[in-house]
Image (cartoon, rainbow, N blue to C red; front, side):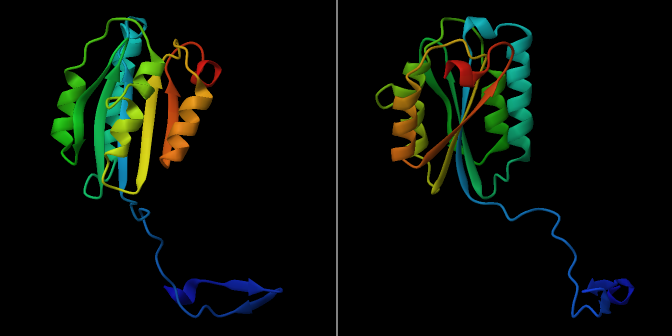
Length: 171
């Protein structure tokens, strides 16, 4: 009730002109999001299960009615496991099908011609493009080259590390 609100201005009570209940959820911004998941051998076991479970949790809270998500995985190679979609079940299934193994090649993950993460993200239909790179941080990369390429394509890259060294230390 607007009459139950007291507002002080310069120490004097003033009457509110109107009131509006707070919005429970911010308006969703259309987003093209690529999850880049490290499936190399160093991710085997608990780290791999954390990777899959946390990615699924994040996807479940994304407003897929206005956003699209793609799933890519990498080890010594890069693979597009699920192209951009709004379908939650398709995304979750593609994560369930992942298996760990192989070496780690961050540069190939980002920079492979036609299949690298930046090229995948560029295919998104929305103006706001984001890559979420999830790894244990055990790879080498020319961070400036990736940053320049992502920036030139208006793509934001966020890194989530699982386990040991932080991605910032290695990426």
